[in-house]
Image (cartoon, rainbow, N blue to C red; front, side, top):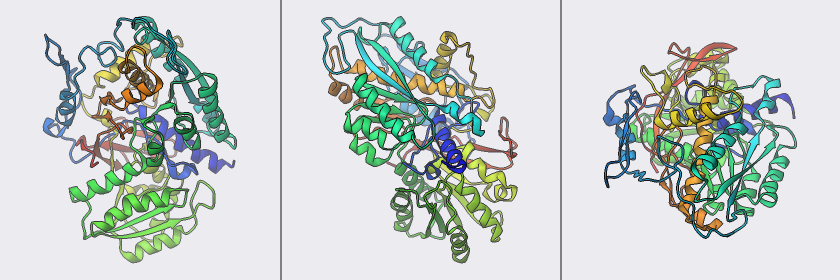
Length: 544
């Protein structure tokens, strides 16, 4: 694997891994196009919209109040989200009751063990339930310059599982039995290692759940959810096809790849940011599956609405950087006099394409740029590479991104993390054995967000197991997971799991790319001026 492939694949993966790190760091899901493989969407928590607004009716208030719960008597146990708007509306429909895995004053609540527990299924004994954490070794990235501090993920999973077992009596008396399997981050054998990890987790450990917060994609996902009928929860967005083939066993903290494109297209049309007066340029890499996704869920949606779209496919030559036909594509865009350009390219391809636009005479203001998180363009790590050339950064300045993440929200005056984030982070800081103390306002440290993401993944699995009853089978837990309804998401955005909907987010917002960034806590880069992606905090329902 050459260095281009390594760097591209790694940065892609880091993007998806850091869905967690909204606070004090980067939050993304995946940088698909340059991954040279299965397209992924990504985690993490970033948001934006029209104004920075503090009107609670639009969901614009920052979380500078701890909020509260209504728990007296027989009243529903409703968390009062201080941000108002869609956040408060969502919580109003989420009755936490006395459920041991949905409270905010504790990670879990001690509860009675089920009587007459028996072995019910593979991985479900009378006294324990098997789960497996598959970890991609992000530390492999350090030697090639992509080291990003995300903390000790193995320790994070252990802390939350140990607390659940030791302080809360497990789940109805069954302890979670946690095993960890590590795979390489990149290299010629990575896909083989992932498939081997799938088989080890399902055959050797009889895993009821496989959990991942560090990136896991490709055919090994189907090995887990389809071939071995095992539930999988990840930060990473998956394809619609994988979701459909999983039989309700695949869950993600992120939107699917096609949802990223479709939601953005529909929202831009509904808001009037794109109209029939626009000529829109789209250049998709020829990475497997991507041109089809882009054409169906973006290009055709815009064309059906009456917009003229110039759609090119640029070649990657089997690599992870796509340069074939770039000059010709930019000339096509120039000749068509495009007024807008939707960026669906990846971390290494987009900078070269925008550089070529500058070379061919595009000036700031000639084109309004748009993006979603397809190929991780909602990530400062990924889109920030466009500003490696200052003239290209100037051209891309003002790009509008549609995504569910709360990227950059921590830059708001008076910002405080959500109740879920604070509870999860405090538990980890107080109980880990490696001396870690992670804070949301530590610039450059994504460990706080990662700990919250792991916390959320483990507790979501625990909630599904609990809801399946005293002596559940694996199918009972699948059914319970698909009936969870409202769920806690790392940044406490409206999210749910329902039959046929394993991707959790229910909202989107508008985010703005700015270069050079003069906002507080900018995303500092070693090779140029800082960039920022900052949400407008105008969350609204996803156009499902």
